[in-house]
Amino acid sequence: MTEPLRFQGKVMSARISERASYWFVSIQVQLTESERQAPERILGVDVGVTALAVDSDGAVFENQKHLAAAQRKLRRLNRWLSRKQTGSKNWSKAKRKLARLHLRIANLRADATHKLTTRLADKASVIVLETLNVAGMLKNHKLSRAIADAAFSDIVCQLSYKAQQVVRTDPFYPSSKTCNGCGWVNRDLTLAERTWICPNCQRALDRDQNAARNIRDEAMRLVSA
Ligand SMILES: [Zn+2]
Image (cartoon, rainbow, N blue to C red; front, side):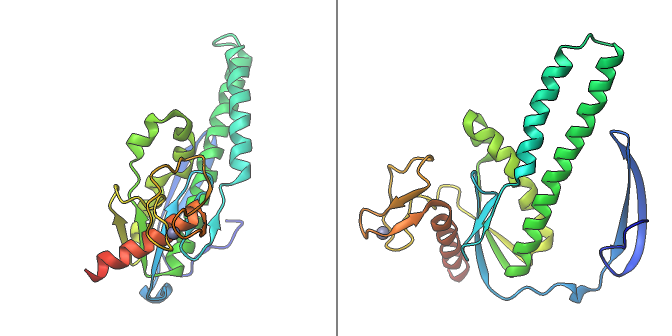
């Protein structure tokens, strides 16, 4: 190993694997239970389309720029491959490059979601997430890529073992459309509107931040009920 282990503890196992002609070793380390202690509080998280996520403290977790760059490169490489003669030397070369790029994109995604979920789990003991209807959203063509990128299901899965408690809100609760100030429901709000003014109390609202606060408040209501 040329890098030190990220976690101190008893090494339980090591597994060696190969993907796209890269070699990997994954090392399992047993940690003592007192490793992580998040403050006793509720944090609302809105997994977004424009940002990776926004929490009810107002923290914005951006989608990575180099992920978008890698995806542009992927489109270029796919076009390049399509012009090669199947089975030729150049075709094999393009295939290998493509496999490596796919792996890089998967690694970038995993890195982003792991950093996000660790940060969130450190901030609060109870994490509240809106239940996104991912299957339904994938039908919406414009949204599908962004949703896949945000990797909602990965985030849910990672939080379920990193956070002390994960609560999901009702999928039909209008978290984006409800004004966090007065409770007014803006039925006409479209997905394109990133900010809006509440017609009832004139408050200026950031779409994602407002949603995250509503998710947190809804969870407090659910927990105390
Ligand atoms: Zn209002």
